[in-house]
Length: 317
Ligand SMILES: Nc1ncnc2c1ncn2[C@@H]1O[C@H](COP(=O)(O)OP(=O)(O)O)[C@@H](O)[C@H]1O
Ligand SMILES: [Mg+2]
Image 1 (cartoon, helix red, strand yellow):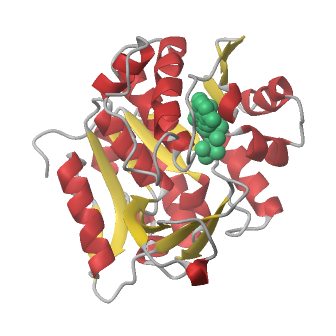
Image 2: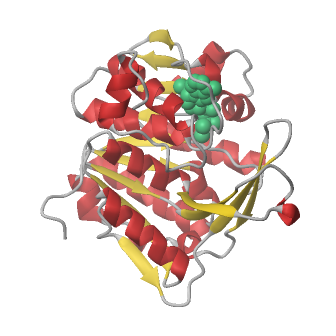
């Protein structure tokens, strides 16, 4: 056990990332940069780099990919007390290729991963009860039925112990059918204190089109805070009956992978440190923007000093 329980606990699937070094198709790629991904792991690292004590809950294999992830969390100071290593398990991986139009293509090998076998007994009840914030995503629920059960179990424990529930739908159409996603995401919004959708998935999941209407559809489920992420248009923040637009921090983006996850982690860290939701969102849009200026998900996640420097208009350092 860690000396003290982490304030932030995130649960889901981590992935090793292979990012093609040059533009082109997968079969023509000559070299890859190895990195890290998995939305909830990204969130945990973003929260940690912004100053929160953080732990991660998952299952990995005892393969080289799982070991690399364990070393990452160790380096970052993310607590791994509740990471289970599965003998013979094949940790999930994904490939990123970039094409001429600036678009990225993602190719996953994750079906049957150890994380997809997360189940309610993997949920550390005492740590969830002791944490100040639990983070779950739609991907945590989409990767397998027992993982979905684990997510609901964790959220119920959190609610029973006044641990804030932070929830990002992160809808991935390849992982589950839209009707199931809609039902599970909207139910999860009822269990959450903070809901963090992006505009595209928000439209698909609620059927609304205008950002304010998408936000209202999530808010109607009861969370105290909804932060609707709108890419270069920033964030629409709904809280206490008010809706406030938080403009994006201006950058020249090269790769938006992980921007939403970084927003989630930075937002959580600042809220727990006493910021108002609006102050936390103003900080988190800067953190999220900075992650779009480098390749891959985890590498470019900024630490607190880099965010504050950029927010003050200074150079990226
Ligand atoms: N091109 C961009 N310029 C500045 N900030 C950006 C840009 N793209 C994303 N962001 C920031 O990252 C946040 C999350 O990105 P978004 O693309 O909306 O979500 P997701 O990564 O979940 O798809 C945005 O709300 C915004 O604050
Ligand atoms: Mg997202």
